[in-house]
Length: 406
Image (cartoon, rainbow, N blue to C red):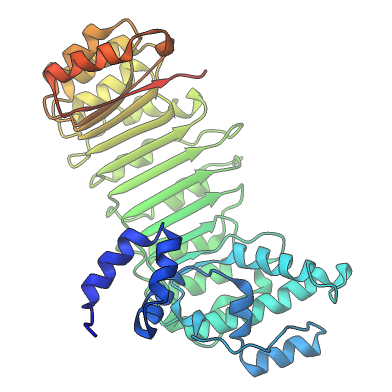
């Protein structure tokens, strides 16, 4: 039998991870294929029952002594826990709770206690068996996060020391973050959900990261005093190449001027549901980001004069620009034509009867590969006719019309 080199397996997996039927067929080829594809499939925890079956005897004894009876009739074919590379703490806890709710032997009054007990044993198993975790989402749900201290379990240091992606809430237990900062030095992607409280340990964690590349900042609740959050953000090293900030509904905007520090940015994303979030953009408009290639305003936008000034400083190197929520779009579109000649991908708002503007964009932005046009009343026009006109200027360009819904 011909053996495939590992690179061939990797190429196969890349195409099949979203095709579960074919993926399953590959499991049945032979034992080597089965082991390889199971290992890839279990990068994410796929089945709680299977994971529970991997628990060691001492964990099963702890569960039994706490009145939690689990079936141990089947011996697992593989050490599934050791394959895990992406760990979502809150999802495991929620699945454990659901698992126990569906068991008649679990009384409702003991549900939270039993959930914590079983979750602890599962995390003990994972910390011990996973040699190098890549991604950790540590947002806790209904239980006190101190009830499950991942770092206290045997093997946790080896498991977490090469962690590269971390998702946490700003209010998480400071001692946990402090301990994590001693272990994790190579995080390159950090997502923080700011929910009204900033843990003291968050500063320790951020200060320990010298290779941080991607930062996602999600604002879910407002702060009475922005001093703590600004002080925290000032600790972020100037190594970021992507910064994404989200502001939810009814959240008070924080000052944006701190973003000017990140002079190595290649990608900048704003997702704000209110123009109020841009009240500090009058300071950011003068900032220069020499390497910025992608700029996205996913919802609302700054005022035209502010955004145009920003493009005067940063538009020349842009390859991707997404501007959807600007209503005074005509002057902005003319500025894009003048200031952003090297665009590859563009998403803008153009009225259905302003083909002349689209024509100017196609003439001046000669490197365009795709353009998405937002507007109103597109359903009433002959899109095919416009598409044919566009092809005369750029036969290979991808043109998408999207109807605005205000």
